[in-house]
Image 1 (tube, helix red, strand yellow):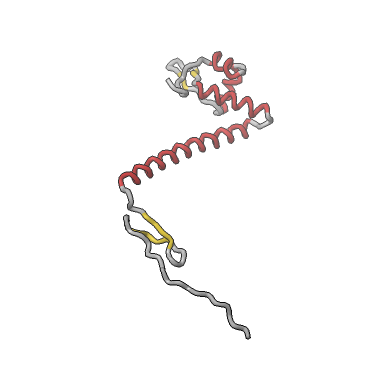
Image 2 (cartoon, rainbow, N blue to C red):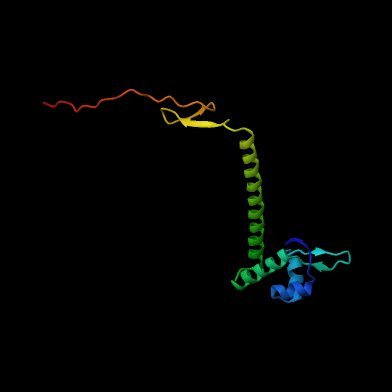
Amino acid sequence: MDETSPLFVISVAAELAGMHPQTLRQYDRLGLVSPTRTAGKSRRYSMRDVVQLREIAQLSSEGVSLEGIRRVLGLEDEVATLKARVRELEAMLADEMLNRPGRRVFAAGAEGEVVTLRSGTRVRRETAMVVWRPLDRG
């Protein structure tokens, strides 16, 4: 079982969220929290749903409208999706770097540009010396 497993009937979910069961039905109709349904069409709430109901209650007590709450929840879902995508891309990048060690080596060129180097090579540095002498103003 995980946080998305549908465990709680509406009365238990309402008690855990500190709400009336009718409020949960209304939120379901409005699409704020959509529990899974059994074959007999009864609602089953997960722990994630209960946490979301508590968040709705908190936002509502702070004066946020139901439409505002819908927007906040939508943005939170989007953030969670994007975070999962970032983790996926980071894992892909790590795999790529392990599979191709040393394939991408960069250095700064003389003019500040980015220079790609072959693995194991070093940048040749200029060894010339410049001597500065003040102008003779006399």
